[in-house]
Length: 299
Image (cartoon, rainbow, N blue to C red; front, side):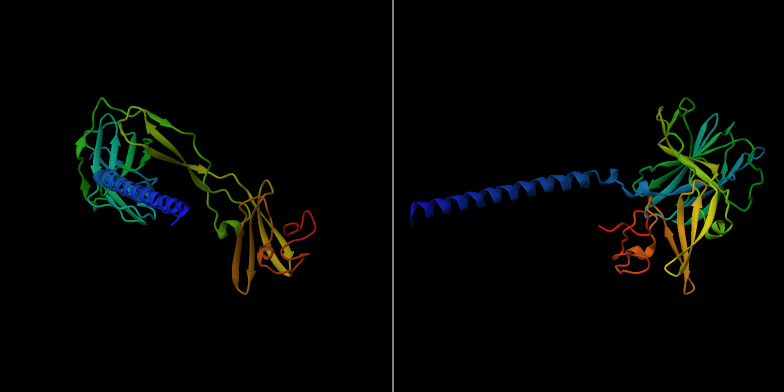
């Protein structure tokens, strides 16, 4: 065997040794990472951030009996909850734990014993995971004009303990987001719509008395909706525009079925522009030569 062959074998052995060392190092590193994950498993809870809790707009307070009734709803999520904590804030703070968590897509009402709490002004709602990790809470302001009729068929929850009188939240909140309103087909058919919606913002407590919360309030949409009829490719389309004449949606009824095209960008192209065929007013497959055609421009 020549020197070149011996050198090739030596180089190959060197590469193998380096690979074995690398594999060993990776194995050791993975063992260490896995050990850290296992040690901190109780501190890790990803699902909790996906909980969708809300407090109903109607809150009932019977000051004479010291009772407060609220309804809590939960949206569709995959979080695994241990319980839900309710904080009632006034001249003192008390918190309550639900006997069992609300399941997804469920709404329940609860009555709280608030004797000893004067000037109730806020309710905070927190999801608590199976690992007792707190998620982002929801905040409800108490305005003082709440209804007073309490459902006496509901059991009364007692506070777990009083909060610290010297610790009151100092909320630092982001700006309110846009008014979120969802239109139904019935709304659209009426032509002009003024609907109630909601706004929300994220708040954190600078005094660190409480965890972060998401505050929500009602708002009213001032968006007018108008309708225009268009005929394309021997089909009748009903186009929905806002008051700025921006296309929002396009509706088409064919063979007894309703097809809805949502316009999510500035393009207003028709559905047949994406079927892979040269049809309707197209000059080539799914395109036209015109700058302002019903489909994208060719070339």
